[in-house]
Each structure stands twice: as C-alpha cells, then as structure tokens.
Length: 226
Image (cartoon, rainbow, N blue to C red; front, side, top):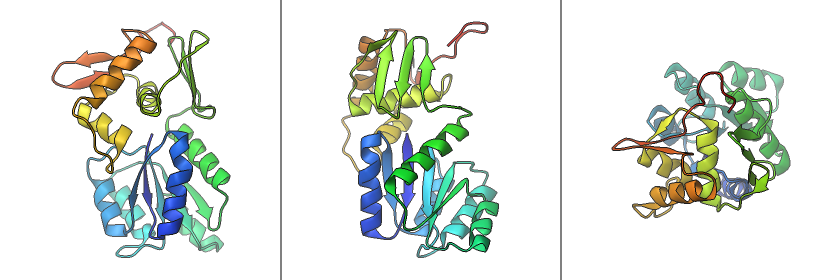
C-alpha cells in the first residue's frame, strides 16, 4: 500500500514514516500544501493520504476541498492539533474520511489507517484471500493452501496491491511507484524480478503479463470462488 504523508513537522513526519515502514507501507513525504495538491491531482497512485491541516502554502483543509472538487476519492486521514468540535466537523464536511488529533499514539494511527483502507476496499477484514492465498497485513504473513510462504518486504507489498485490486491492470511504472515510492533507486527490471519470485513461490498462473502494457491478477470467472 502506498501512502502520501503530508506533514511539515520534520520530526513528526520522520517518526510516522519510521512507524509505518514495518507495516509494509510505501510512504512518500511532502511538507507543504501546494506540493500535496499537485501530487493528489496528478497521476500518482496513492492508496491513502495522511494530511496535516496546519501546512504552509495551502492549509490542509484547502488541499482537501480542492482534491475532492477534482474528483479524487483517495481515503484521507486528517491530522491536526485543532480539537474543537467545529474544526472536526469542517474537516469531515470537506471530505476527510477520518480525523486524528495531535498528540496521538502510533498504535491508534496504524489502526485508523488499516480501518480506512479496509473501508475504501469494501472489506470487513484487512485479510486478503484469493485462490488459496491468504495475506494478513496485521501479522504480515502469507500462506498458500495453509502453508506459510516467506516473502520479502517488496514481494509482500506487490502481492498486497494485486490481491487488493483483482482485475486491475498495473503498468510497470505504476507498480514501481507503489512498491518503491519516490526516494529509492530502482533497477530497471526490479518489478519483473518480484513478479517472477511471486509466481515461483505461489503459482505460475497467479499474475498475467499483458505484453507491452503491464500485469494483472485476473478476477475469478463468474460462479467460481476466489
């Protein structure tokens, strides 16, 4: 899962990023409202955004309102020091999906983010299941027909993206940004290598290559269980 974190406090931003990394999130960081708006109105594939309201340039509420007017429905968790009920109402009315008041516990941030992502995908549970594969983000574990399958952090992230969006066609560039974000140097064949490893560890037919386009995890045929 790729998360956009928009927070202008460097120490808080670094702490959140560090806390989310073991959860297999790819976290990209911005520190001002105008950059956040440009990223969210562009073609960047984010699964969710964590948005501080007190930002330079444009405040978070302006960013949120503009993003929703643009038609972007990315789930947004608002962070703010403003704890008055009127401020919360304004944030929610502007399009926030959840609201967390500073200071907060990291465990609560993680729980709210999991719930937000779960709701956005129409799931009652964070666990993803598909044709004998079971991926549990909470325990960061994967099994295939009941047998544990060890995956690297990148492989886990890639598999989570595919399982969360069966039938969606991903280009290689989109997968690279989802798995690596903005800050890491990436070998040109990195995604091909990760896909190869997933096929070898799970099943060869798991991910279909669309030559010249990208990759897709096919939806089950009508009448068949995933």
